[in-house]
Length: 160
Image (cartoon, rainbow, N blue to C red; front, side, top):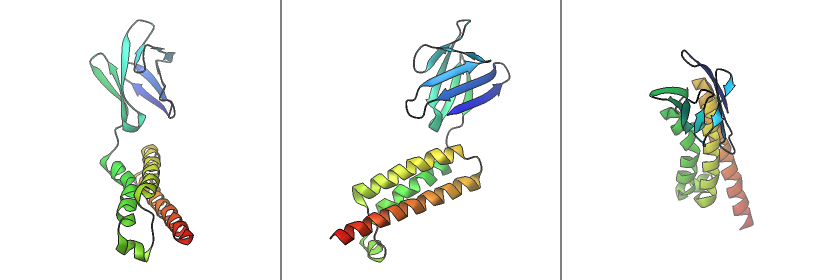
């Protein structure tokens, strides 16, 4: 994930965080800062900067006493939309009445599928800018979760 912002005092700030490893890189004013630890950096003049948070939950650059927001914290509706696949599999998969109409795998398998698709939804929703696009992505992930859990439930019932 690469972020680029312009600050009135510091100028151009580039922040890069690896999705897989979590490694962070920071440059201010076009100059790469020296990494002291996973969250601390130093420029050529010896001034130290600290990173608070991570991309998904919001990144803040601490410059002495000033806090500079590099990426926004997730909104409440992004979290709710991302929890829907997990809630769907937990409630539907554990309801005998609902499963008698349309079988859906629940339990550990359904929870795993709902959790993975919910996390993927959260990452995609965080990247999207428009609210309508966030809703479309979430509805698509919810439908994908329902379809996958339905097909697995059919396969389990056919094996019995």
